[in-house]
Length: 369
Image 1: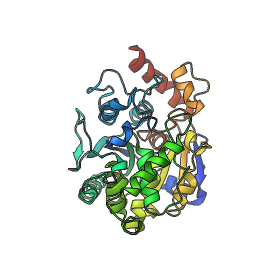
Image 2 (image 1 turned 30 degrees about the horizontal axis):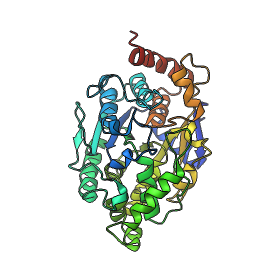
Image 3 (image 1 turned 30 degrees about the vertical axis):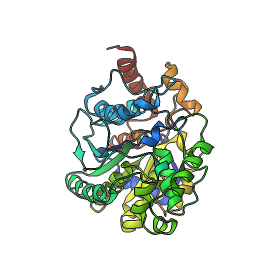
Image 4 (image 1 turned 60 degrees about the vertical axis):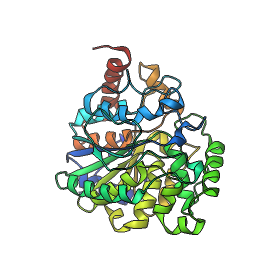
């Protein structure tokens, strides 16, 4: 019998493949993996909202991992916030993980501040500013290590959800897509309510003009594109997903950054794409300033689904503001919510998620018990 998709999940593209994928994971226990990295690109003014100021962005990925694993951050007081004081979307992810009892793991492609938590170290380095044209040191090494981690973790998982945390990541994603010849200008999303496309495109063009590889080399070699203008999260996530998807279904959890990860998967091992779907939030698929459907379709037929969060009726202004387009996605919150809904066979829905997210918000933002 054909699975009836619950109202809490929106099928945004490739409906037949989306229903097939959901049927494979329905009622099964997910394993959540967060791929982290840092890039100096995040410190360019106006690029990222993933921190109260650009210099603090180095702490956002480790703090997100700590939040998922411990329910609180250790490397910083409180939780990562935007300049407007809005908490990390990791708050949403943490809640979905707790509601569905998902095991949580982290992999690091290269960070400046290490999490005070267990994680897979892939022996990569933090990313440089992409304007240098030499952004990531030896991405192939990170990629190859990530494949091994993905294969081994998948051996003990029914399916895997892979999210990410890397401030500035939509700009580096744009750069990697453009370096490979994708039509990506004005199509990546932003944590900011007004998408700074001009700043991003100017940054990317500067990086491409200074690239250590020729345009032809970057079009033909995805690792050259990453090395020149990428970030360390991309090879970590792509390698891990390939390794895992050889064995089990993988839900890529994220926004337009995952289109860059998917482009790497397509370039290196397209055969696994039949075991992959993308899970995001309604704020991403409804975003008029980006186009996740087009970016993904340029790589191939991969279904896109979205968690149908609805914070309009929340008693908390810090959650209601998500409905204005601030933040939109991050730390795999959309995919984690979809996984929680599926693991419970629909018993967890948008309303129960919101109720628990509010409790998490109270505890972390106001100190309430």
